[in-house]
Length: 132
Image 1 (cartoon, one colour):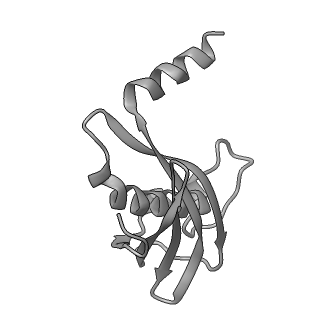
Image 2 (spheres, helix red, strand yellow):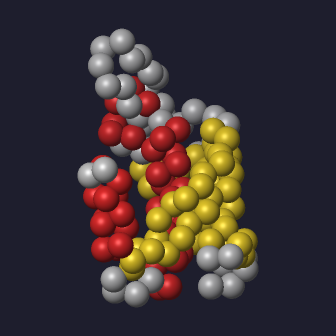
């Protein structure tokens, strides 16, 4: 992957993506706009797709850091363009600038860091953590 390499994809915001559905019980009341958590997930997807050719069959990329600002609300059924731009390596970590634009313009931006890990080692590490 070269510095400046970019991946965009277009996504239509659905009901399941709205902040209204982030809550875990009735006391959690959020608006009917794209949830920040879902915006971050879309940004991660863009960076992960850019990295897909780098992973071997027994590997996956995983997010290790996200620093984003959610700048504007996006309504259900709006189309968003999600962008990841590779900014270089920091040791074994892959650094990206990420953005999301809706039909009104820039709705969110930030940075994202990913790593390539062996899938089985990741799962075993997670199991080991909870078995202590």
